[in-house]
Image (cartoon, rainbow, N blue to C red):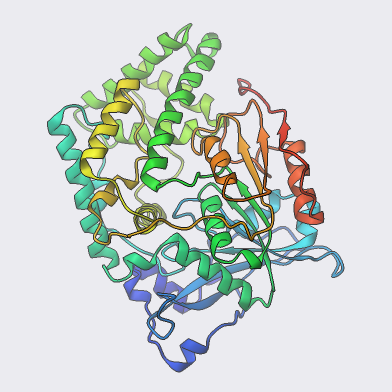
Length: 495
């Protein structure tokens, strides 16, 4: 399938400013979706299902509907059931901020229970600033894509100042690459308005939504603005109602707990991995790897790349064995091949993701003060001298060129009950986020996968209790009388 010329221009430009459209009368009147072929990045679903894509023109600034406009890329996989079974649209978002939702309509739908696939048109979309929807670019992002990168854990006042300087340069690069004018409008709240524009363009009075990780934050933002348009809302692996910087710090502590669990698990399989017979011995092996990478004089894989690999592996238990094998390989022969991620960090999609991630987080609310960042890093290092700080993405908001004066509103008492889903030991979106967000979603229920340590639960972990509960809610509107606790898989089996 070929990408339409207009979409190709958007993708190649990789700047929000380049996709601003003149506020002509015809642009202002555009409020419909015409579907056709999809970009090559969108996979084809198994027959007889089909996927189709289109673009919706929306204002850059909702408060200025006659001003510049951008295009939002939308995908749709129609419901597979009979017309009588169809009950509406299910918008989906994979997370981020910065995740592309255009292919997600196909990939996530394939994992949904059959009853959900039969009932809903699954609608994917690239949020503004992402993928084929006015994609943003922050250039070199303060050296983020330089390999090997600077050690991301600053130790001592000089290193702390270098860390802060890199955050300032990242903010400057985003202002130069994306343009200062779009920065305030590439926010979660503005994306919520885009979601409602998609709903209206499809002619639906209400919509259902499945948001994972950052998608849960996006769903809560939509609920705050359009509670009367919400049909059924599933928020999986929930981001709590905190400022983004506060969430990042909470996550960094959860990663320490997950890594300790990984150390103990690896030690329990010492015959398989050979990294030590107890958690502390495995920790020493881990530190030898990281210190060895720090001492290497050449190469493109250093402590920054290592920490990114660890961050990624800790989020899904099926990656733990690969991480342990990678640690052993480095200690055995100095190889980093097993530690490298499957996709290149500095590719166009990754660059767009990282840019959109910072731009959205910094548009969603006030950033931290530089002194606060240093104090928090020191507190984290008192918990563990060698933490994983890869997720501290909102630190650059301390130097952002646009300073929001309020947080993104989340939740509404006027909305129908939502279903929140969480893994008991998720290190990426700790479960306390779901408990806190439920407080602003009255009547909602929490479905917890106990004894689980991964990120992403519904139609992801293969748990019948979770999937059945959520499917009954989406298809039949069954809201559990109380919170639901499902038996989880426990720690991973060794392959």
